Amino acid sequence: MDAVFAGMRTRRKAGAPPRALPARRVLAIDAMRGLTILVMIFVNALAGVRGMPAWLEHAPAELDGMTFPDVVFPAFLFIVGMSIPFAVAQRQAAGDGAWRLQGHMLARAAGLLALGVFMVNAEAGYNEAAMGFSIHLWSLLFYTAAILLWNVYRFDNPLWGKALRLAGLALLLWLALAYRAGPDGKERLAPQWWGILGLIGWAYLYASLCHTLARGRLLPLLGALAACVALYCLTRGHAEATAPLARLLAGQAENAIHTAIALAGVCTSLLFFERLDGNAGARRYALAAALALGLAGAAWLLRPYFGISKIHATPSWALYSAAICILLFGLLYWLIDLRQLSGWTGFLRPAAANPLLAYIIPYIVYALLQTLHIGLPSVLDAGLPGLLWSLAYAVAVLYVVRGLNRLQIRLQL
Image 1 (tube, rainbow, N blue to C red):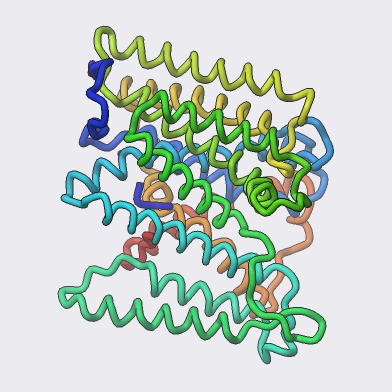
Image 2 (image 1 turned 30 degrees about the vertical axis):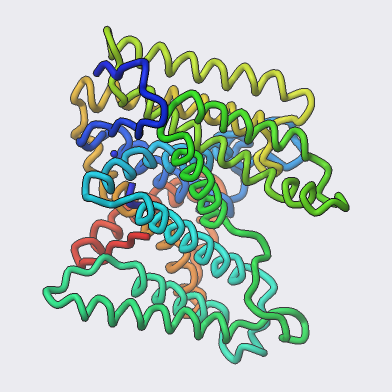
């Protein structure tokens, strides 16, 4: 989740490998990732604050509409998708072959799914009496294990890093075995749902597979995006189907919608950064605008049938969100990379380079405060004080990430 970077010939030989993207870092992608992490922490903190205007709260599941927070998760999926072609190009430049690329992709997706399952099981259903210790202590040990397992080590002797990873893996396995759930404490650790990280993991896995099968070509990837939306439309309401294949496809409908957002990000990277003949800059923006308009048009057409809902992961929510993300990235790219107004992005870089670490820090803080029985003043639970506190907290987390980086704590799946 966090290791993720002009005329292209319009005709390419059949079966030829995808043309690598430029070997340079695109600051606008980093800035958009950092902004998304900052806003994600802010809206998560704000979720417990009373008296906020409706546009700062997630829209109810049955409301045909979306709010500002409802675009945050899609923005992260979109950035995950944008990063896929650059990550592939970077690994190919380092000499990775097809099998190593696929192995890395599967390992990263599996890591996200595992993290999601652990985090979800810490939210509800647990039985602390059967476990013998509090869920908050269990969570702290889990995050310790995750950091040990996925930290980027810089030891002169690589055996130290391997030993710490093995310790993290052993602790993770012990915590999985120690977990108990249900009224009688006989249930074990299992997916209740996949959690945000798990949903990102599924979308990353499917979008990466589509990018591989399409060999990095734009038109097949657009076709895959359309197929994801079609899968949702055709299987909606068939989760209880008797045919195994129909039930399987229906069970993946929401993952397909999340994948469509990630694929929109993949397509946006190709539109902006694969070489284009002629007036590359103007053509990039024209094609990106056409893609955004097409997604928004499809969202408008599908809305009467499925509505707009983040909770239900409807196509219109996903397509409108993806269109917004394309326009936002276009603005950031023009401002940061083309106009060279990038000084303000330095504050976002630690979170942009370490999104997983930035994401889990609020959960670590919460578990620690609960373990120590420390609460926040009630004045921060409502109104303007709560709003300002949520914003300050999000900014503070980014500074914590910077400090942890200086202590050589950097997570990478």
